[in-house]
Image (cartoon, rainbow over all chains, first blue to last red; front, side):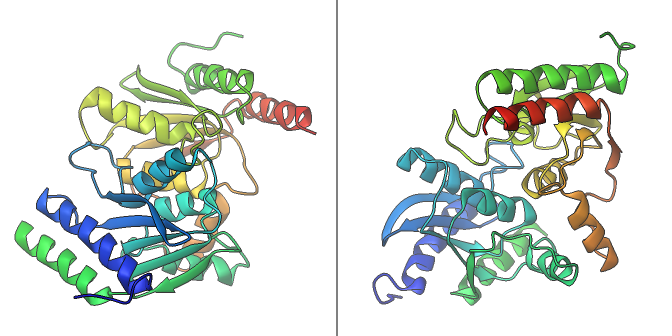
Length: 155
Length: 155
């Protein structure tokens, strides 16, 4: 499948290629890329098993990688594409990095940040950076199918 | 000051030594250590500036270090001592690592996880691992003073 160049689907499709690499290495198949002015500055996939590190989620690895690339602690004006809704740890990393935009694919009912954000907002709190823009459910079906396929293979 | 061996104050004092290293390197002075059966298996201090990485909080660095030491993704039965209340990112890392006990020093009103946990609980959610035990305000004054001294020096 091809998508219009520089569209959200175009970039998410590249994040999905990262997720597929995770799948092939027997890792929970989640991928992330970071894009700054239409240039991909970091790509990563979940490596919690191969690194034996529970913090080695695709988002954390891609943020650290983008920081190294730019030589900067902040990723203002950047967009992170993640195939699955980030967890609270990764949402926190996105917060600290000052990434401007989060685009994700499949919802994550159990550990995704959204339900905690709803609870926070009811109490006038915000777990995201106030300037963060969020777009969800881009290539959701593809991302969710890869996750289902992985977990089915584990049963 | 000396503290009874293997007491929470004893270990927190070592985390404070890590925080002091951060202070001396012009980093926000937060330190963390991870203890398993009275043995310190990881020490770290905040290095967001020197690594130019917003994820390089003391907790994340110490968790990754402890994983490497044990060759294990999980840190069950371990205690993490942090001089300042963890943020949501670090609370998430503690969640994923399955650390059994969190001990922290000073409260962090702005980005600490506690107020978000209160909001979550009102909605029958839990941002911490259900088995996590939490002890707070161990050597709180010392940790808070180091933070104040740092931020005063920045004005």
